[in-house]
Image (cartoon, rainbow, N blue to C red; front, side, top):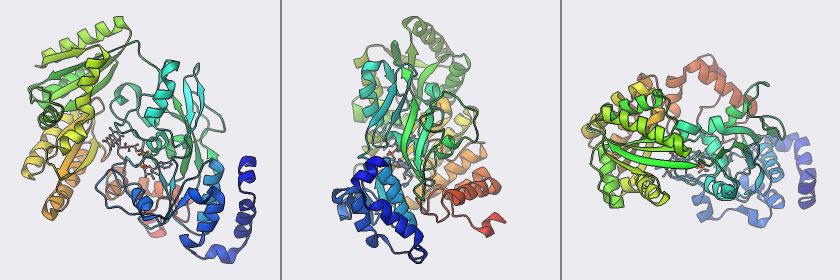
Length: 497
Ligand SMILES: Cc1cc2nc3c(=O)[nH]c(=O)nc-3n(C[C@H](O)[C@H](O)[C@H](O)COP(=O)(O)OP(=O)(O)OC[C@H]3O[C@@H](n4cnc5c(N)ncnc54)[C@H](O)[C@@H]3O)c2cc1C
């Protein structure tokens, strides 16, 4: 607060004045009336109402329509975030946190206008504790920035959603990705969060400066905010677990006669206790797309990409067990790769899946939807989904984090073809409901955002959703934090069912 008070001497007094003026508080004065106050908090260059900047912050990587905010603010420290939030709270201005905009469910759109909090200027790596293997970062730090910084320490942060997302955005969406089968998702890797609540209060979910590997102290507020998609508060710091960079890494590709055979192998590999680091599934359409895009020649069949981390000796054992299992399931065309260059070449195909899918239909747009089911149901849902794609006359290659029962359909559609868009929406709806019918979830990692709100009561049950609405109402009674996402607002009627 001292640092903030120095740079903005008047604003604290200003906020206190507003706080005590009930007539002012009762009015919804709109964004334009608070712009000058915003500027006195984060400087002229820290506030933008330019059309291009607002457009840039009103959309993510999904096909959801751009919904620009009325203004974008670029705070430099948590005190500025808190002061801005206090003003928004007093003047009833919606607040939408923005990381890097790589989300896939329309989470950053300003449905009710308001102010986008772009957190890119808060990009400090605050603390690295090498011996404890943890790090605390601000919200402008992306996962690639962190791993580059950590390189000389022998440590790394493994959660990898493909895109170079901000780590606090990843916490906000409970992101995961290719390494989750071994290292877990953001839920397992966040130790503490600093959050600015809707009224500007700053909290640390596990206590100030605390970073124990485990805790049994009170409610798990850290995991309440992980996956809250900006609807409960603005994450201004996250403390993360780190891991030792593995001594050796081996990657492999293997093709299978059927989806069932590929998934059977996955289950057996996991059951045999092989600590596999990545096990990724690509269907025949995705392999074909990757072959064309990356000039490769993998057989156009269901395929697993695998990666093993460990010591040289342990890798030999892991690789042997895996090879035996996959061969028993009819796996063939093994390509093993140990040196970094060959491994990178091999994984480039998987990492470029999004662009490979897009290249199948030049001029079209990609829309990725994800579901997650218990592993044993994966073959059934993938087979049924592929049949549905053919019947619906849609292009949607499938890539999946198969070790977690999680997969994506990367739908490639013509945004100007209304009939195709209707078929797309019906298809994604059926896909989500298929996952629910198989004891799964409508989203394993992309989140609910805008597109999957209506599925939440079906997945969780009305009483559970009411508990969530009550929590939201307690933390954000004015419904200012990213309104219109994840949950419908709390109401007495909905509480009574
Ligand atoms: C090619 C591609 C591949 C992808 N693959 C995966 C994948 O495999 N796994 C996966 O999990 N995701 C994947 N994603 C999705 C995306 O990268 C993740 O959802 C990521 O976590 C979003 O982070 P971000 O910083 O870009 O957040 P944004 O897009 O900026 O925001 C996403 C949501 O989080 C909120 N938010 C952002 N920052 C904060 C903050 N500091 N405090 C509070 N709320 C905040 C926003 O309001 C919004 O609701 C992929 C995306 C692309 C483009």
